[in-house]
Length: 236
Length: 236
Image (cartoon, rainbow over all chains, first blue to last red):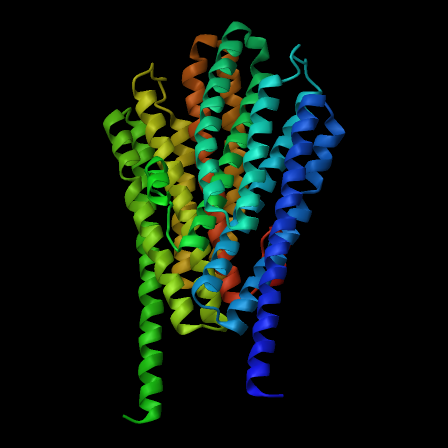
């Protein structure tokens, strides 16, 4: 084998390793999205067993995180990647941490769904939680699409969505306070609703974090802790 | 210069880089600890201005995170570290993410302190929050000590502390529910207390995460998502 063939061979194998790694992150994202969707269904449908199932299945998310993490360390140690390849690996190490925490929040929502299923149900079947949950699910899906396509424009869309999610969350919390004041017997139940809303809001934050890593991967620019509203100008 | 001198020189410089990096992480830990302590003081002392100061100072934590992160990428790209050096860098990338999130929680507690300062004060000056806050501060300090000394035994102590913090947090939440039921006019205020307690509980989780990275650094073993209570047997 000629030296150039060998180099080409190594480089092809390296590219395949990176491609496999990216696909595993996307699979992890898909699993986490599905956990979130099921957790929201469990709340809306008052389905205690489904909520508990989501909570029980969190170990699958955790297993994926550990195995992807190990693969990242293996590639760092054996390939010593540079420039954009290195940024990809660092971004993946961070992305899977956020995905794992989204899984933890879905687990919490699963437990809360199970609790809420055993309590009085409001006539609107937790419509506000469903609306917020759907919004956050879309954010997460868009974040993973931005990751898959290395799409910076889509990443910036998610930053703006997160502001809307925060507003929705604030409105929902204020509404919960009003309910509790009007009917103190509802406090325990409504407090569970605020915990679920808070978990959803946090999932939005994690989706935003993932989009920051996408921008870092593509542009090598760290957009964390900067005023995102000013960033879209720079980007365009 | 002989080749061996050159190798020695490069290796000394590399060790110095790693030492500097560790020291910067410890400095970031120190800053975050101080932010947490001030945030708790602001709640207990009803000091709105101090609470807002903590919130305003969060940018210092963020700046440290970004600069340490860049240094990690630089070292990964230029030194291609292996084995324990690589584990150190990966652990640092993760640790500073948790430290940054602890900073975010301290910022939230600062804002909550400022809100609470303008409301009725309970006769006990939020003693339960102070107790929980002190406990969590100690956990964080112990986690950073475990990091500084690569002390696996101390890391395991923190895992056990986190279980106690979770119990304290649950008790505090139950107490808050009772208060709200007994006096619905207190709901808004007490809800702020539960948010602060939740932030403290999350800081405990982040401290625990840091200890998991310490174990990973020292033993190359990933202890996330494993039953910690069984781990101390393996360790001893």
